[in-house]
Image (cartoon, rainbow, N blue to C red):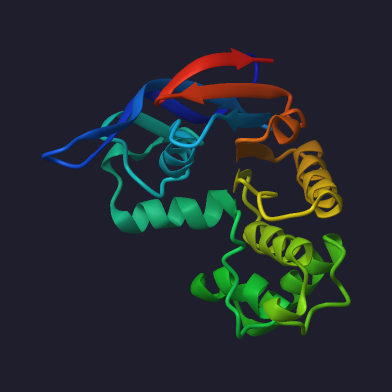
Amino acid sequence: MNKQSVLEARGVWKIYGTKVKVEALRGITLSIGKAEFVAVIGPSGSGKSTLMHVLGCLERPTHGEVVVDGVNIAHLSQDELAEIRARRIGFVFQQYNLLPRKTAQRNVELPLLFQGVGAAERAGRAAQLLEQVGLGHRLDHRPSQMSGGEQQRVAIARALVSDPTIIIADEPTGNLDSTSTLEIMTILSNLNDQGRTLLVVTHDPEIAAWAERIVSLRDGRIIDDED
């Protein structure tokens, strides 16, 4: 790969259970370059969400190494892992994961609150990002007052608020109709065009087709990796 690598899995295994062991990942080796758009595709149970969790520092591998922006996470403390997640990686999930009692603006501000950013700066950055995703008129609306597509746009704005270099999206259009799907994938594609590394996990070939590279998983192993 010619691009500088920002996400790497080196011989990664992820095994759950003790008496009955489930091998969710089996020797995965994968390198994702800076500003690359990669889709990981596979059926349910293929290991794609587990791979996302491991690459996103949400879980540690059982065996093997994971490197994020040149940092090997193997011996990092939980606090250090949390710092990498907070500063370098933005997550977008199928279920949006918004706080139901908070407005769109407050939901986007939340990561900055945990980082100790002042109220005025939090509000300004959140409002700017919501404007960027087409929700400048929805700052004071709660999730129940928004469509699924609008909620996912709030989630994308929240993922961007710490200015991460990597965006990881797990089935980001799984709950959306075709119109909202097109809107969300256009936003994500534009973020990639702006220089962010984008990893999208999906079971849908039409979503995977947006990527410049598709990695296919089955039974915890990579079965195809094509540009």
